[in-house]
Length: 184
Image (cartoon, rainbow, N blue to C red):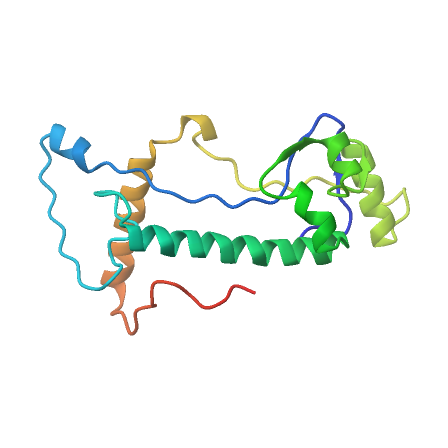
């Protein structure tokens, strides 16, 4: 779950606990672009996440149940990590957004400050002296800035190609059911 201490700037945009889900339906777009797509499906809910059509009533019920299960599991984690009761957490959950200062008042963060305050607290929690050097570790640089990434459809296409590559590398020995068990 979260770190043992959370530092936020007073004006930081801090989200509370919320879970969103949905899908973009592109079926008619492909027809307008004169693409002919055919889907061969076998199984009760294999098309649940298909972009060709909206959710059926049954699928919408399944997605809402998933959202509720994930949301409740997340609430339990936050209750434990932030040492809040369910009654204390209820009014600040439900996907609301707070400033860093408001989040501190609601016990979603522990301290107001910037990078220096965060580093000082990390040193203290690790039992390190102020003289121990610290260095910033970053992940690999991205060739494409996040705002210039390809459209979601291109991302899904790349995901699909990767799936085909993996399937051609080795036979599938088992297929996971649509929904895994409880996430907790």
